[in-house]
Image 1 (tube, rainbow over the protein chains, first blue to last red):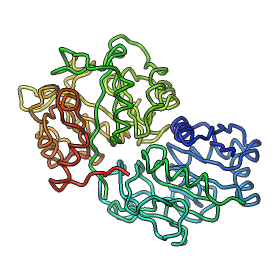
Image 2: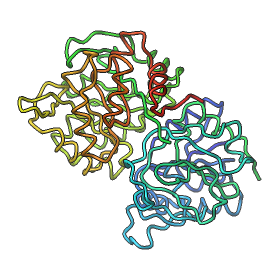
Image 3: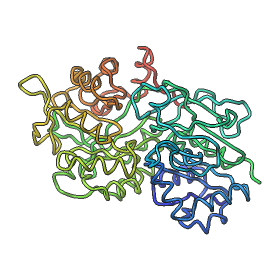
Length: 213
Length: 253
C-alpha cells in the first residue's frame, strides 16, 4: 500500500512518517500535486495558520488536486490538526475577511472558529492530553480504542461541523470540541495521533486498514 | 477533561545528559538516546530536551542529533538551546521536534516569538524563562543558562511573551533548581494568575507532594529532572500520586 504525506511546505512531517514506519509502512512525501493520484491513501498535515496554509495549498495546485482525488476518485484522506481544519468550508484564522473567513477545502462541511468564540474560558491554546469519546459505536477510525482514551491536542481553533453526523468524536475543553470528523472516506483528527503514543499509532493503523474504494 | 502533564526535562551537554544544582555543578547522568527510548517505553506525557551549551558556544542547534532522538519519540518533543533564528526553528521541526523552546534569544530579539508563532503557530513556541529571586521580593529573568541578569521582571516578561504569541511558558526557578526542596510556589502562582496560556512549572521537584502543590498553585504541567535521575521516583509514580490527590492525569493506553 502506498501512503502519501502531503508536503506543501509546512509542518513536522517527520513525526508522521516515523509513526507510519512503526506500522511497517514507508510513506512517500508527495511534494507535487500532480503526483497525488499515485498514492492509495493520503495524509494532510498542517501547523501554523489556516490562511497561510490555504494560500500554500492554492498556490501549489493542491486544492483542486485534493478535491479531485477525494470527490472523484474516493481516495481516503486523513487530515491532522490544522490538516483537519483545512477540510472545512472556511476559517476565521488569519482571514482578511473576518466575517466570511478564508475558504477551505470544503471536504467536510463546517466552519473553523476560535475557542474563545465558543464559550471556552480555559487557558488557550488547548495543550495536552484530553480524553476523546467516540460519538458512534461503529466508527472504524476508533476501533480497538476504548472510549475516553487520551490523545494529544494543541490548538486554539475548533472545527464546528455543519452536520452532527460528521463529528466522529468529541472532547471537552470548557466547551464541546470536535476531536475527529469524517465524511465518506475523508477523516480528520484535531489531536495528533503521531504524538499520542500507542493510542495514536492504533488510530493510524485503523486509517491504513480502513475501507477503500 | 484535560490532563495535567508530567514532563521529564533532559539537559544535554556535549553528548551527555547532565543535571546540576542552581544551574551549576553539572553531573553526568547518562546518555540522551537511551533516556529518550526508556521514557517512550514508559509512555511519558511529553519530553523537553535542552542543549545547555549551544547559546554560550554560539553554535546552531545540533539537528542531526535531534533527528536521531526524535526518531525514538512518539510523544510531544520540545527542543531548546541555541535557537535564535526562524531558520533554526524550521530545521528543528524538520528534524522531528514538535515545539521549540526559546529563552536567551527572546531577550535579544523578542520579535522572534512573533515570527515563529506566525509561521509555525503558537502551539510550537514554548517560551522558557529562568528566574532568580531579587532583593525586592520579585523575580528577575536570566539569560545564557542563568549566567546573565537581564533585569527583566518575570511577570512583565511572561505577559509580553504571551502577547507576542508564545503558546506555553516554561518557568524555571534557578534558586530551587536541583535542590529537590519543592517548586517556587509563589512564583508559579504570580505568573499563572497573570497569563492565560498554559504554564509548565520547573525547578525544585523532590517528591510527588511538591508536584501536587505546584499544580494547586496554577501550573498546567510539571517538569522535573533530578527527581527522576537521582531518586527511585518515576513519572508513572508521580501520576499515580497526582491522581490519588484528585488531579486528573493521563492513564496510558
